[in-house]
Length: 519
Image 1 (tube, rainbow, N blue to C red):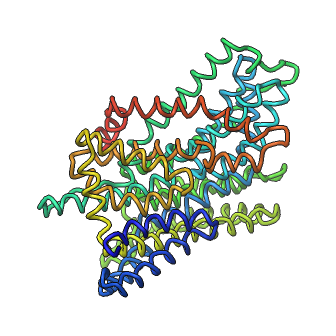
Image 2 (spheres, rainbow, N blue to C red):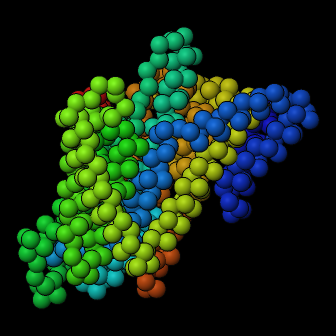
Image 3 (cartoon, rainbow, N blue to C red):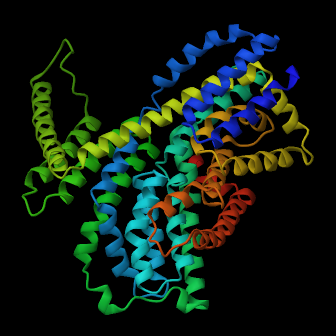
């Protein structure tokens, strides 16, 4: 029986997660239990645990993973300051006069929120509270409305900057290096978060387009399921109002993604820019008629500092300094004082609106959950490898009928199945380090494989009966929306997801073209 301890360990983890105990502790607890069993039966060398402290320290000091709390903070600030509500209202006025226009507005706002928050749970709940009642009031089929809101909310999985893509990039980069070492290469290549973001951008936008085409066709074939909104209900809007609501979050998205994809900033630096930008946007949104002169001046000042730093190097620690150097340093200091003053004003407005405390608390809890899960998974994977699990998985994948494609289909099916009851963090940090090197040794492109896995995980979030997004929506939906309606509503979108995966499968350039151009 000792030779099957690795199988029992994985099965035990799946069972323990279903018990509902906190996942991070469940993963580590199951790992420690089987390490003890393995040591008692002679199947596990406890000397391997000496590498554990180094693994944990490496996780906590990883520069890429530091971006996660910053992106989480950025998303929560934008969500709590009700910028999403303004976006949906104006998009509804813009497209509402079309059949299916309100549904299109929900998808577009979901895509914008995905690119600005990257947090699926927050996006689904926000959309359910804002968009779902509006769609029902305007005569939308409850199943279509629920499915559209649920699916639009999960775009945060695939459209960067996504927490999933950050974790996925780190895991796949390590797996790629392991695969190259196993092949005897000692000058190894890696993949960056920027490459993964670039690879996921076009497929993510493609899915948005596929959803919109489906809504238009559905509204044309079944007008009663997605009627146009009454112009009297719509109200009036103006180009100025739409621009004031749309341009700030889009500019923030472009600043964050553009700096990463353009190679100007690392993901962590771009995440810091996003957090600062979100604070300033929240300050404008919460002005309540108060003067925004300082906030406007701080935005200009911070942009000027960035431009100044890009054009020259401002360092007062050098031995030879000119009058110009002192002058530039003085200008930079003044600009920073103005910028920090505007940030403090935004922070105070959030504090008075009682938004700062919940944002900080939720950022702390979400980040702690993610890092605790990564550390627990590190313990699990170390002990699983010590029990011979990685060798068994490699043999199983290599023995799949159909060669490389058969192996990939098996892994994708396994990821999809695990997505029913495991979060993307657990799947990414437990399963992928085990199966990733084997798949990459078969010759698959790591960038393309990362995108395929990301879309697969997004699909599993929607799949009944255990899809996480379904539970998020169930908790926030009005009482008249039943669980059965939600399940039926997401089924067409699951088929569209599979179509999207098929397109990326047969046309890999959809995922690999942009990274090849930018990097």
